[in-house]
Length: 230
Image (cartoon, rainbow, N blue to C red; front, side, top):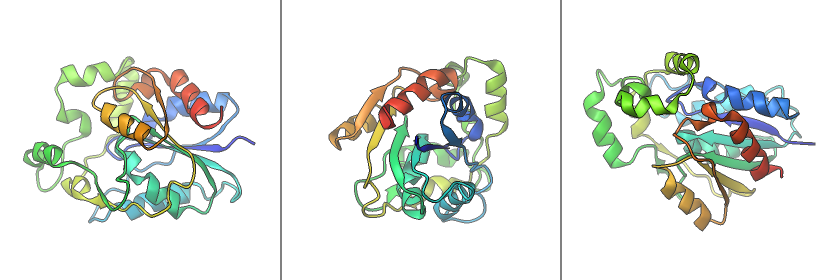
């Protein structure tokens, strides 16, 4: 039996960044879950336990013996070790999709110092603008090929607290007791993809911008299957 794909979006955006891929995987006969993390990054840190709880709660109706493939996009990759360790289901694979990698050991910062230096001047009363508002139009527009999809993705973005990016995420020992792989779209995630190769993981490249999964959901779904099932 094929595993259930659990498509985990970055808390900076919303679940619609995975919806087109979920539709492709479902059409291919896969079971798919797309947990929503839209309302869990609020209040005071630490935020990561609430993210783990949200994913676990979303899987409440999935049989306990059903194997899972965890797929995290962007900074959701940093939460995969904690999610893996917080689940009772067997995990058959983890795929990091144009994603930040957790440290090999010890807690991992969500944002490197240079990103925090970029973000701190934007914060008003501790809250940041929506993610797509950080960048110039010339940077944002290439990530979207469909105006309606852009409107949907932009509208569901939360405003996150600066403290979200200041947090450190634990890396439980033994979390990678299953095959891990990496799907690269393009810069600036070349370095994490190279590190994934150094860790002995399978790496695939589907050239595109950071939200390429909404531009080419069929290609993304195909490579998720190849990396974890094929």
